[in-house]
Image 1 (tube, rainbow, N blue to C red):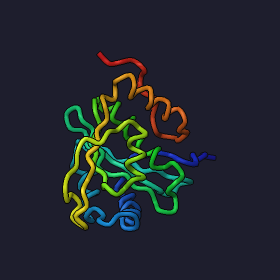
Image 2 (cartoon, rainbow, N blue to C red; image 1 turned 135 degrees about the vertical axis):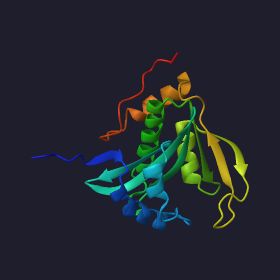
Image 3 (spheres, rainbow, N blue to C red; image 1 turned 30 degrees about the vertical axis):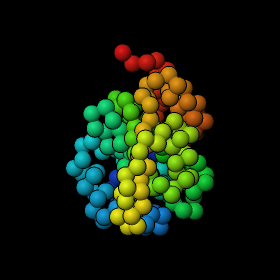
Image 4 (cartoon, rainbow, N blue to C red; image 1 turned 180 degrees about the horizontal axis):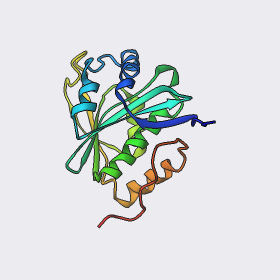
Length: 183
């Protein structure tokens, strides 16, 4: 008998797209266009997308683009009824771990200025607000807060990440990055 982990991170597959889009329609004012994920998975070699499953059901997803030494978080979403369970934290930790694997040095993202919950999560991981994109969101003209991490290899960032990472018990997230500073 095969034992399926209760909560697991996996690479996003084409067959996950309808579930991802259903979550997006429920939680975001402007979900990505219908073919965006299919294009990302099939054609964007800089893209990494993951899903989070609980008891086999897709409950969240996230993605990033790796451009030179920067990992840009493109999206994170958790099914509305599963918010508040730490799944957003798990997905962000999985993206940061993926950034280490890809050789990134920094992470960046944009977040709605009014999304205090997400901003606090990013700050908890060590991201800092460095600016705003005025009227960035076309659905309602809301500003985006631009957030960056320090070097993900800097001792303070890595210590904080390893502390958070050590408390996440999810299959498929990968192994913790080395404590050493890369040469």
